[in-house]
Length: 202
Image (cartoon, rainbow, N blue to C red; front, top):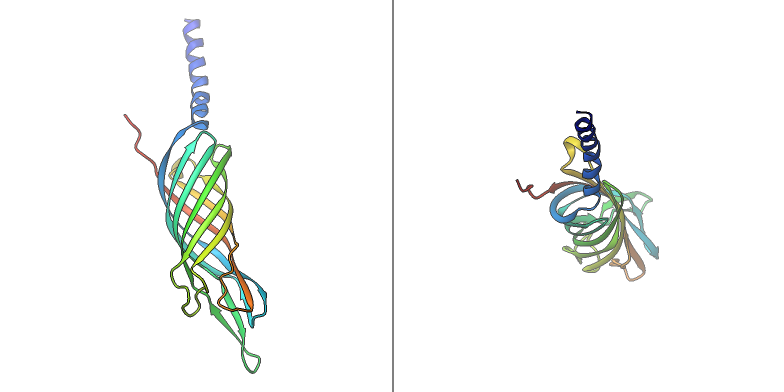
């Protein structure tokens, strides 16, 4: 009887550890949908009458997350707005605020590392194509390349299908329509992800 109790106690004690060990080394992938907002602005250098200001702009899209133990590959397809806003000084000293609607279709290709379960540190390039280049308040060129650094956090318990993305996107391309100035996108972005996990096999 004592041996049976000891075996039962050992099994009950070790089961969570075994489950945790398995969750630390999973292999597989899933899709997810995401929506959020970003604090956007332009880094401006050169000669321009525009004064760059920060703006709050939306983003939405889909992702695919593939995990191999502690390494994660995560491509995404996003529709987002960048560019922030400008404060323009007019004749007479008055200032006018102008929103820049730089609408992009973006493809971040992120590589991640999981230092502890539930948290992923991510980095990689973001390739963007402007849908309104050349238009009023649009960017001066179609393509934009950015460098991404951020984190992916998985919620637990009742919110276990949701994750949080927080990242900074540092634009490397000059997207200015002005010949005398350089504009580069800067974005601090936060998004909520709904994970479409595959159904567990019975």
